[in-house]
Image (cartoon, rainbow, N blue to C red):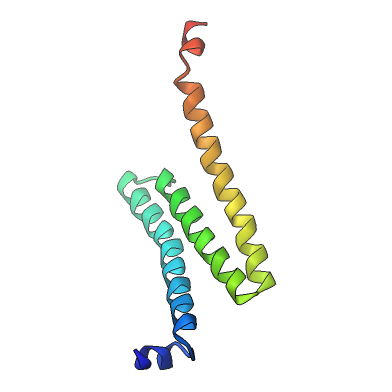
Length: 108
């Protein structure tokens, strides 16, 4: 494990775990772009699958936690705004689904 700590420039096991967490967060965040790209290529149109927003939210929350640990105000601010936007998009998606499935709307 010492070789990994040397490569990642960390001195303690705790710091190593945080850096690995940060890398996993970045991979989660990057996966959303791959997902969106694949979905768009398959549809031959620009598509934004709902999973994009889930990857965004989870990756954003993980990066926000990592930014808090690193005590980086720029990183914290950037991730906090993103988390709000991703959450809002998911809220709007589910609110729209409730409205379109509302039997009272169909009866009117």
